[in-house]
Length: 366
Ligand code: 2RA
Image 1 (cartoon, helix red, strand yellow):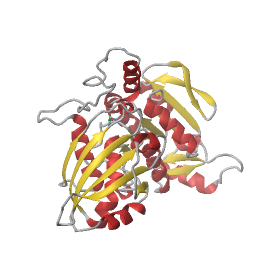
Image 2: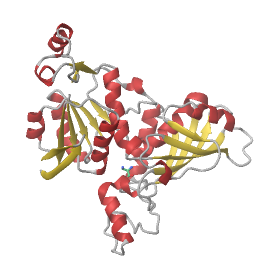
Image 3: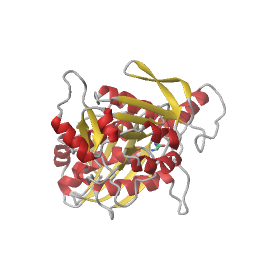
Image 4: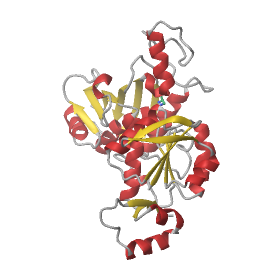
C-alpha cells in the first residue's frame, strides 16, 4: 500500500507517522509532502523519507492508495477530490469536508457504521469534538442525552507547531506574536478560531456541529465556550449534560467503564500532563448537579491527547476500519493495487497467493 502524508512535517503529520509505526500498519511505500521540498526529510521506521512539495501533479503522479491530509483547509480543498478521482482514499484532518452531505464523520469507537462502500473521503473531526464525543457516546447509548454544554481548556499544540513555538517564545520573554488572540503565557484566552457573525468562534461552531453529527443527533441542544490555555498538549473539557432518562452516577460509571476508548477515573482527578501521548479519552469527576431533584443533570471532566485521539490516532483507526470493512482490500503488490481495476485485481488476488515472506499490501476497492 502506498500511503501519502500531506503535511508530514507538521505536528499532526508527524504524529500520524508515529502512530502508523506503532500500530504496525503495513506500509509498502511512504510518501511524504509539505508545502515545499524539505531536504532534511522525515524519519519513518528508521529510514529517512524525502519530503516533496505537495503539488497536484506530484501527488497524482505518485499514485497513493491512501492519502492522509494533515495540513490546512486550502490544501485539502484543492487536492483531495483530485486524488479521489485518481483512485485514492482520502483521510482528511482539515475541516473542509466534515459537514458535507454523504461524507461520514467517523470515530471508530462511536459510529463505525457511518461508513458506506462508496465513501472515499473520510474527514477526521475537530479534535475537541472527538474527545467530547468519545465520552458522550456511552451516555447517549445508555440513557440518551437531552442537552450538552461544554467549556474547554485547549492546549497550544491544537494550533500546530506555531502554537507550541508561540508559547515557548513567550516563556523566554518574547512579546506575543499574534498566534493567539491574547498573550498565552500565564494567561487563558477565551477565543479559539475567528469569530462568526453571532458571537461564537469557529471552534465553538465546529464543536457543536461535529459532535451532533458524530452522535447522529442533529437537533441535540448544545453550547460551547472554547478556551486556549498554556498547556503544551492534551485538551481538557468541563462538560455539563442533561440525560433523557433519570440516572445515577453509578449507572453512568458503568456505561463509561465499559466504553471503548474511555478510561474512567471513579475517584480523584486527571490532568492533561498525565494523558500526553496516549490514545484514550479520560473521564473523571462524574457527579450530579447540586440539588438536582430530577436525576437528569450531571457534570464530568474529560481529557484527551488531541494530537493522538483527536487527530492522528483517529485517522489511522479510520484506515484500520476501512481495511476491516474491505473498503480497502488486501492485495499482493503495489503494481496490482494501482494498475488493475478492482475486479481484475480481485481475480488476480484469488489466483495468486502472496509470495511467502513478503509483506501483503492493500488496495482501495473502487
Ligand atoms: C485547536 N481544535 O485546538 C483546534 C484545532 N486543532 O486549535
